[in-house]
Length: 239
Image 1 (cartoon, rainbow, N blue to C red):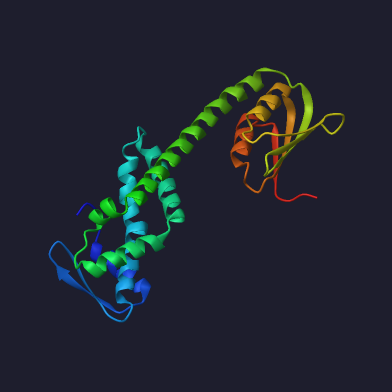
Image 2 (image 1 turned 90 degrees about the vertical axis):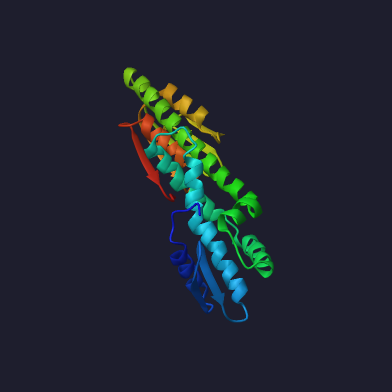
């Protein structure tokens, strides 16, 4: 009742994916389902579980995202990230078990009612996905604003050294050298101390070798923004 979807079409698609024989019937306010075969009940439970966690999740997460104080374009970003996270981390097995147990006792099922009252931890998980996506977006915006300020600061001061070479590793280890006397190695998991150090050193050229296999992506993006026009980025494996 709460979702603007063609329930019969969605259920037909999910049941076909399961492969068990079935037929859909006209029913007042919903869809009638007749299952055949030994495993028909389990197949129906799996189809309904997939429908909830793959299809209806978008509507639930959209309602949650609407509660955030963001403009529409940013709400769309949060929605897309949260739905992706919810789908990737969802464990369907427990939902199928609950639906199977319910259908053995009941002949009617209200999807939104089942979700609200028998899958409360799933709804909470979806809300956490929204909050995580919301926080990540705010952090990215904060990084972008900080990068703008630091870039202006760098542009107003002359370079203090010709060039620096930075190697980033996935475990947080950073190696910094100027190719001559300077060589430093230390662990900085957040990258804040490293950024402060590099801005203070103000190299005319910064070579960044990202050996983290994507683990330091946020730091790399921040450095790219701050040292725009001075940075050369290399990714992959180096010998």
